[in-house]
Length: 595
Image (cartoon, rainbow, N blue to C red):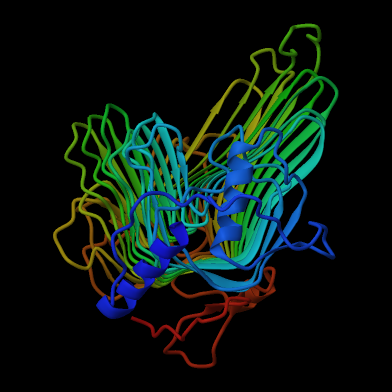
């Protein structure tokens, strides 16, 4: 009967020219289904029909003990599953999918998931939960709509998968997403306290607790679908993934690492951040990911490290930050990411106090390299009391933070770096912080034994910043504001960067061609080194220093070509004097004329 209904719906679709309303959920009710193949790498289980796909979902979701752990699947045909709402493969945390699914270059059409009123499926997508060892590759989903759960405190929503958890307690494990694509599937986040929404993936967490390593890789993926966040206390929204984290946590004489890597991904879809609700709420939206976090915790004699890396990623889509509507709310928006942080904590004592003379080391390293934004980025409004917004071509806000214990035997290292990146999109923000590359850089350290590193280096900002006046934003050609830099910040904040803006506008007295404002910085801090800025029009301040100036509003009169060329070969200088330098190793760049 279910098969007959499916055929009727498909016939109606062909005549009406549009997909009919979904009725009920997909379940395999034929019974006795058997996959072809043996589930090995050389003889994978063959999925050639929607019945086979629904059978996989039924078995994973309803069978205790995860019957397909480590099994291999391959998709033989394009599938259309639009006649009914889809039940995600791996419906909850107790039933994750932990096999390998090879899409074989095929496409799944008309994917509809509606968990807006469910009570049991917080992770929404073709797959719901992915666990250790999961691998999804060579798969496209095209057409349809994913609506996230709104009945619980947290929701994870993506066209491919809602939630990924690689969790190890000793040893090594991984999750890999490679060559997967969203072609026009609209993704709508759940209206919950925590809402993580992405064009492909909702959230991914690589966590190692013990002696070992956890690893998540997203590589060669793309999105053209609309990604729309719903109001939330904490809403993280991205073209590829909403939220990602690498976290190493350990106690005793061990080493732990959690790594999260996004590589060679492209977003062409429109990203709309969610409005905040509740005091001190956060909305963060980015063309590639909304929120990225690298954290390491080391206790006793242990070494805990967290790594978050994005490289060779490109955003062409429009990103709109969510409104900071609640009191003390924050809204971030960026072409690559909204908010990113590297945090490290070290403590001399173990958790159970059996070791109290150690030198625990914790490090968090957040790194963005060779990424580009060509889309327009607009910050959200800030109607909430004491609310703030921050928007930039690459990032909305980046921070480095660390803490070492008070006795001085634990050591924390927090770092973020943005290197070899460019933005050529139009950046706009009515208030808060606005920059050609980033809105806000923040560093904060606690305890006597910590080091911070906050770097924007060998980067390029073109296009416009707040071209449509008026704007009450603190604005800079590279970064709007640097905040709370301290003596533990061992690196210059902005180094060997180029600004080539046709317009730069912002609040009077807090708009400059490199950095709009620096707050809470010791007099000895050094922020600028070898930068070049050219802006054709705007209301930027005229103060300048000629070379290696320590003033935060400094700029150079001309780029030192020989020195820059020898600095890691980052820059390429065209023969024409009418165009600006370009970054090596990044495809798709055009010659930007001197404004």
